[in-house]
Length: 141
Image (cartoon, rainbow, N blue to C red; front, side, top):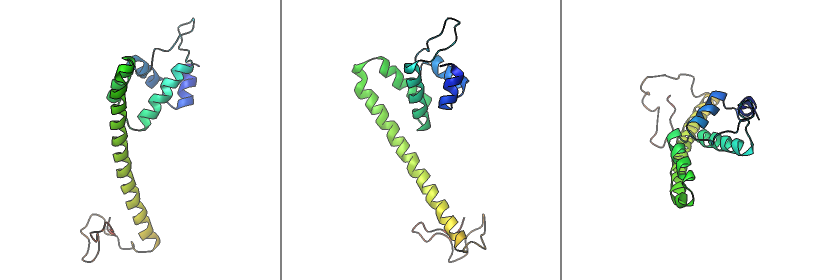
């Protein structure tokens, strides 16, 4: 597959694919006789893994460390596992933050749908008896 085809298939720009190859996140991509990248199944597998990891929020630095450990062989299995577990914990924390934000938005939408936000006071202190009740039930913005 050409870089344009891989770019389209995975939704990653050609520049990003070249960058991933240059910094070693994906192995060197085979080239055809004209010197044009010709992504094979293994190359696409590397691209797919990096896309998945980046979509999960894994930082480039952690991916570089992971690939370096992988290249050292089976002696680094435990270190790779620990790195992935750390990244998993960070992802779970981000997901919890996002869920809390989603819950807050759902609550506000519900208040609007029930007609309780007609006199919203953006950026002002809540009136006595309005706002958060200490249990996370907030009617103020």
